Length: 86
Image (tube, rainbow, N blue to C red; front, side):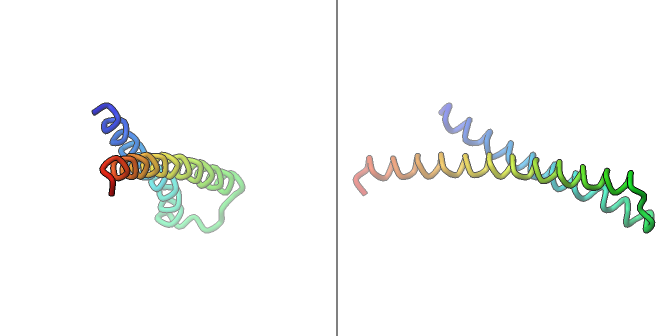
């Protein structure tokens, strides 16, 4: 039962982190587009690059958690099938 909770926790963590990464990448772009900031000064460009970089790192972490949950699920399923003799 504990393994199932840990598995579900990994999935929930990955979904939350991926959603946060999308939010982090989307909000600055929407602000630039909404307020028609066409003449970007260097501070805005550096801020956008930092936001996109942080979003990429968060997305990588979220996908890592998701892949870990998937590999644990596959290992559990293959072990269960081997145990049943299928």
